[in-house]
Length: 331
Image 1 (cartoon, rainbow, N blue to C red):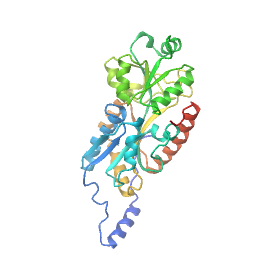
Image 2: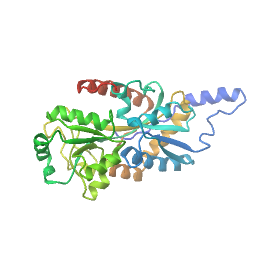
Image 3: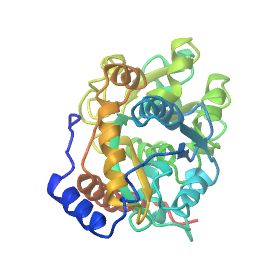
Image 4: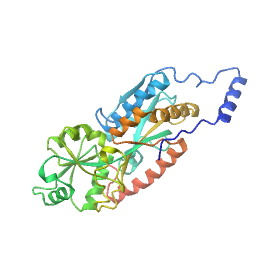
């Protein structure tokens, strides 16, 4: 899906403005924004979501003429920050960047304090990225076939596979990979992508499913390598085109893509979310932003609010079913 803009319906805005002016007052949102905006990132600095948000925040602040602050709130496998965003004032000054793991969370997290579909109003999808199978640089990881052979014959217990926290997308993809290959892995949870990648480079774990953004710097420096990507077709992102897909390698059910979307607390005024959405789409069509996102392995995907709402609902249904199928239960 290419980035598109969806203009505000002029008739709706004119009707709203006329009604307000009839009461002798300017609309409350007319001056929006008149102070800094923050985007809550539910992970520590250094991971893919953090990097993507910082690219958007910089360009968005230029368009809105107000500082856009990245507010990292890690914890709870990405759920602490999102819960805080859900409970924030619905005034357009606190947003959140959410991803795949947040819509299937009820299937893996018991007593989740927020509901992704109920407690937020959608703004726009930002982009998608395949998950990359990263490994260390040793000869046992010369290629995908060698990696599988080594993993299936490792002595001393199942080989260690990192993830970004129990119930995270990297955990779910790892479990799906284990199911598809019939290889048992010891799943090691971390508090985000950056520390997991550091331990992968140091040889503390043997593999890790993550986005390109999480592993690009260590891959560029020759400390980790990428063997394959999830999905049915090769990525349009130049740096990923040479990597085979799991489908090419015979794993037909590894059709997985990470994605990111911007949301606001429920009941945030429609005019405010539309102002933000249009500015985000403008930012996402900026050549420099597209170039930087491509370097992170992200394909830009702007949507309408209704399109994002439907997408969140369908992803929730699909992945909650998959979580059950791989044996994950709320914990």
